Amino acid sequence: MIRFVLQRLAFAIPTLFAVVTATFFLLRLAPGGPFDGDRELAPEVRASLDARYGLDKSLPEQFISYIAGLLRGDFGPSFRYKDVAVSDIIADQLPVSLTIGALALVLAAGLGVSLGALMAARHNSWFDRTSTGVMSALIAVPSFVTAPLLALVFGVLLGWLPVGGWNAGNPLNLILPVVALGLPNAAYIARLTRASVLETLSADHVIVARAKGLSPSTVMRRHVLPPAMLPVVSYVGPIAVMVLTGSVVIEKIFGLPGTGLAFLNGALNRDYTLVMGLVVVYAGLIVLVNLLTDLAYGALNPALRVGK
Amino acid sequence: MSDTVAARTPFQRAQDRFTRNRPALFAFCWLAILALLAGAALVLGPHGYDQIYWDRIGEPPDLSTGHIFGTDYNGRDLFARTMLGVVVSFSIGILSAIVSLVIGVIYGAVSGYVGGRTDLIMMRIVDGLYAVPFMFFIIIVVVLFGRSIVLLFIAVGAIQWLTMARIVRAQTLSIKKSDYITAARFSGAPPWRILSRHVAPNLTGVLIVYLTLIIPDVILIESFISFLGLGVQEPMTSLGVLIADGAKEIYTAPWLLAFPSLTLMTILFALSLLGDGLRDALDPKSEAIS
Image 1: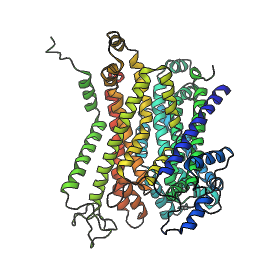
Image 2 (image 1 turned 90 degrees about the vertical axis):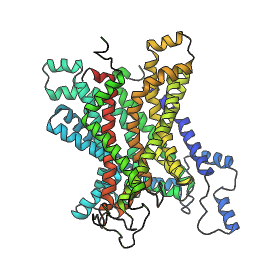
Image 3 (image 1 turned 180 degrees about the vertical axis):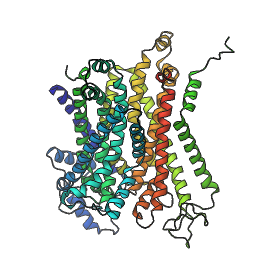
Image 4 (image 1 turned 90 degrees about the horizontal axis):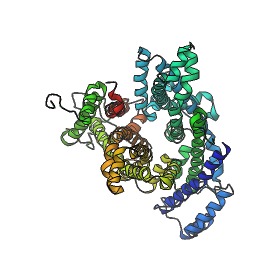
């Protein structure tokens, strides 16, 4: 178990290094720089700016000093916002994105699994059929369509919830973004769960469990859901990544000061260090999520239990 | 004998199963109609997608003027623009799917067939690439290297091949163990010939199903990127751009959001029904049921 975790973490280091290297050179090879504004800067101003941010050195030198900084946990100064460290920007905005993302994921998993199991349990009933239709429709509606619609209905017409803003994480402000981000994924998970539970319901061990006279709910809880969760868990990793990075659109619509929006603006402004820093943080998050998924997979499937 | 009970090829049986699946058939027809309609509207339609009617700015749908979807705030016919969006979305979806198909099949088949250490390293690379925040990667590419459609579909195709490679590898592994591959190998066929003549054709079913899953994904990603203002640029348009523009006018001109998003939703919905239908039709396991 510990061996497995260490192994994965050891593999994560070259992965992260490759991601950092690729992003670094991709950014630098692109035309345009952080100080190419509308106005041409005076040559001496430009030179002093370049010197201050180390842009006057050769690319390999810049790369080495950046990596050296990263190893010390230093993301460097923002190229755009004077005297602000990238780590401060990230520390400021990551909690916003993570809160929204984590809540959306909880909503997606909770709603998706319970609805999917319920649909499978009442297979072919009117409840199953309507839900299947609704779920398929929800998957087909992108979050950037649901988000403005939700804002229109609950924010403007009914006036129950604020249409945007962070407001220091006020729960009321969180509801709409979390629902918009979580709903399509909940539908996706529900569909996966339903298919998987239906397949498991006809497995031999479930028939035995039922023949022993266990109540349907016990059978579902003890014998059907754990194995049926396997294919679902293998999708939670990609879904988590999608929720975390997909929040760009949600943050834009609801005007939330999160990392997605920071990334978008950073890329537009050629704020190299900010973009790099966010890529590093997100790549790290993805590695972590994938690791957790693998561990959950092992916990649910004794045959695949790692380290044995 | 054989002329009374005609032997039916697997393909014919698949076709039968598919045509019996009403929703999938309906979805297929809808997509075909939409594609034809969009093509026809672009070539023959009365309104150009960039034609500006100065006297009809932001008008709601009106049959008498011929703007059945209304006009936008630049006085352009929304129907023509939505149809252009359909064409752009379909093209990006199909082209990216082909890019990912080519990379994914070659990579996955080689990895699965060669096996051993090569397989391990190749799959570890795929695992590693999964750690790249791809939405960010696409944003970087389109922001830094210009907002062209071509670049967009290459970037999207270049990330979608990962899952494709995994699926192809898994399939190749199981095909590799079958008797006809052993037979081919013992009769002295070189590996590339076995891959191209014996392995690849047997992947077709899985690939078709997976393609119908990739295309909606790609269409969604394109809309995402266009929604952020990084995709297709004016006066060209895509469904994502139209939805983004419509979302801004949701209180004053709801039809600008309604028509493009409904169009996108029916496309995505139809593609998922089509994918389900194809999976049922091409999966030999479903033979027993039908």
